Amino acid sequence: MPVWVGVAILGTTVALIAQSTHSRRDLELRRKLVDVQRDRIRSTRHRARAGLLASSAYSGQQASPWLVVIAVLLVVGALYLASSLFIPLTIALLAYLTLRPMTTRLGRLGLPRPIAAGIIIAGCFSLVAFVTTLLYSPMQSWLDRAPASVGRLRQNLDVVAQPLTTLDRAEEELEEAGDEVGANRPELEVSVKKPGFIDRDYLINTTGSALAFIGAIAVLAFFMLSSGDELLNRILNVLPRDSQRREVLATIGEIQDNVGSYLSHITYINVGLGVAVSVVMWLVGMPTPVLWGVMAALLNFIPYIGPLGGTVLVLVAAASTFESFTRALGTAGAFWLTTAIEGQFITPAIIGKTLRVGSLVVLVAVAFWGFLWGLPGIFLAVPLLIVQRTVFASFDATYPLAVILGENARDAGHPCEPVHDDERIAEIA
Image (cartoon, rainbow, N blue to C red):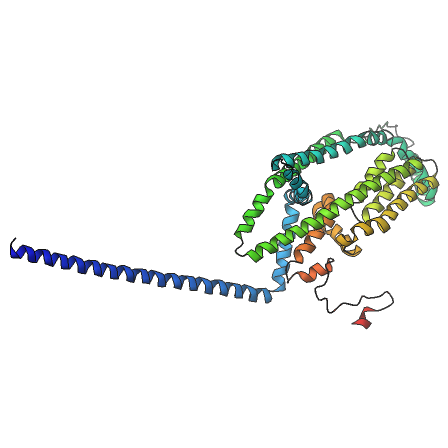
């Protein structure tokens, strides 16, 4: 082998070794630079997060009250304008919270969750259909007797409210003046066709809307019961900390327990009240006692206002049925006494710990949700009040609102002395 070939091979080998060594050093330097850049990025992110949290906390402390008022008004406006969306969604969500334990029990028996949810939804709406069928005949009988009942009601009201002689005399004078003016004019025959007691077109449109509303609730409740837990798990996976997940689960569990306990207990109470009212109405001789029992059970879902409204309806119906107004007053009094016994003794003893809300707060909630959502809002006022109280109690900033809505104060070492009836608030302050 020539010498120059050996020298070339040796030089090439040395060059390759030097190049590989240099490339290794470059690779290590690059890795170190990448690690340094990653550390800088991470520290920058942490600082940004810390600054964001600090700024959010600072802004939360220094938030303008006008911004809070504007945000509340926007939320209320959205609830009002999109009521057709939020009402069935809210009812379905409350049904999910109430019926979820039952679905879980059926799932433990080996039934798939969709089948268990379908069985529960079908059972609930079969019960609604049964009650509607049960009320059809009594309602039809009252509608058939409506013309005669209106005349009897007017007679009884005339007995109570004495004739307004001034209006009667004015009417007679107007008739006499009209006779004198139109004595020489030809007589005109005027026939007025009285409309029916119920507009069939309106009834058909209302029935279609009600069926669509009920169908939307059924579909939403079914999917919530069958796959709602999966959505909840996905939401929990978004939260970065286990403590936050536990807090959310605890809040949802408390809402489910409180709302489910209230709705189940009040339903049992109202069913018993309906049976009692039906028996009382049968004893006093009121026609269709089952109708008034079901009406009492439904109206009792509205605290304070429902029983009073039912008493007025019974008084009007009894005055249009019986010849004596005294008997009508006795019938309405029997209805009111039955509901008063239930409201003063039975309901506070059973759901007093779950509700824990003053009567004024309940009336304000009924008025507020009734203004936003109409009749469905009136029925949903108390369950939504319980949900609001539980959610407000989960945050330090809104805990005072939860205390106003019935939550216990957290400062156990500093109890608040109640204001007695014979004391003035100014003196205590």
